[in-house]
Structures are given as structure tokens and as C-alpha cells.
Length: 265
Image (cartoon, rainbow, N blue to C red; front, side, top):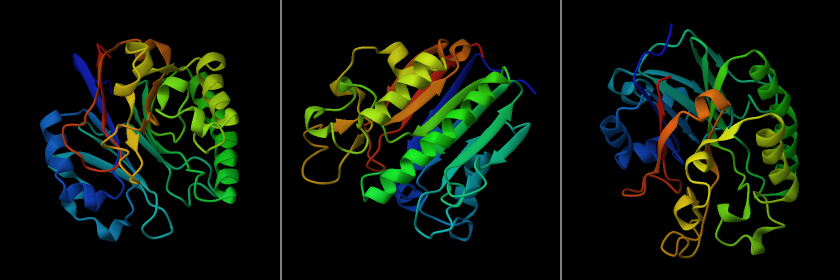
């Protein structure tokens, strides 16, 4: 099955709790945007917590991976068209238990909703983040070698370059901007050959590019943000991105939704 539309609209958003975001009007807003595919992260819910309006909003097909731990992590992917196939999880172990990966295939296109671990809460979580990165790189490389088009959406929890966060000098030794994490991103783009879709269209934006703001202090009011939410694509489709928007007119969580329109998929 081909995705036959003149424009393919994909939205990704970390909701910091699907029920919380729903109460703030996220799904009503998403409906007005009419996405072909909507990727969400950090559900903080189990299947039993979600009613039909969240499992299949506005008639979309919904697919989810929940964390075993309650009130933690979890990802979802909604699509207008029923996918040809869906894969829940990628490592059959530590990170599938945390609810971090849903993959849907539409013809020769794969769209992934992923939630990379944060390492900021404790040293052992940073170690877990490094383990995740070590597992994810060969996984995404293998998918690319199949010759499929891929759009990886989600909260990657890494700011790639200095222009991707406000206070880069103060964060060089902090999770999310560590040299090893940034190098992982560089490898994904430069060696493996993926495209950072936002930067393809906006290579030099600084203050406008942020997608997450700490809930401490006045970070949002002062725009002390980070760009850690991405759509990352294989070149053939990534370079067809025509428009990208970080939606900040309403606040559904501590992250802003990232909207991309791809031409003639």
C-alpha cells in the first residue's frame, strides 16, 4: 500500500502524560492539523488508562508500547491509513520494558515513534542511555540497508550542536549535550546518512528552534530551551520536506509539537 497524498504531514510530540495533554486540548488541536501520522512520546499511562478517544482519536489507527512501570515513558503512533505492518519494540529486553519504540510500515516507508532515555536523573540512567544508543544505531542502520525510506520521530533527548540549546556552555558536562551523545548524532547524520529534517530547512535558526523547556525557574518565559525533538529521515524523503513548524501558540506539555510537511511521497 502506498501513501498516496500530495503532501504527507507528520507531527511528533512528547506529551509528558497523554491524559494531561488531552485535558489541555492536544487532540482537538491535532485534529485541526489533519496529520497523516501523529507520533507521541511519554504516555505515562497503561492501556487500561486510555479510553477509545485516546486509543483511536477521530478514527485514526492507534498503536502503542507501554512501559511496565506505571506512570512512566511509553510511546504511540496514530495513522489515518492502516499500516501494512506494525512492530512494537526493537530490543526484546531492557528498553522494550520501558516502552520506547513503535514502527509502522506503509509501502516502502517506515515511520518510527521513539522515546530515547533521559540520563539526567541519575548516573545509572545515563549508563542506560548509552546502552540504548549502542543498541539503536545498528538497528536503524540495518533498517536503512533494507532500502526503505525511514522517518524517525521522537524525543531523542540530545541537543546536537551549540545552536540547539540556549545555554550550551553551561551544559557541556550535562546529559543531553555530552560529547559522546553529540558524536552519536553526528555519526547518524554524517556516517549513516540520515537527514536532520528541521536543520535541512532551517540550518541557522537559534532561539526559534527549541522544542523543550525545563519546568524549573522561568525557562519557558525566558526561552531557555533545547532542541531535542526531531524528525530524522533518509535523504530521499528528508529532502522532500517543504515546511516545518514548532507549534508554540498553545502549551500542551513541556515540549512543543514538531510538524513537518513532506512533498510528493
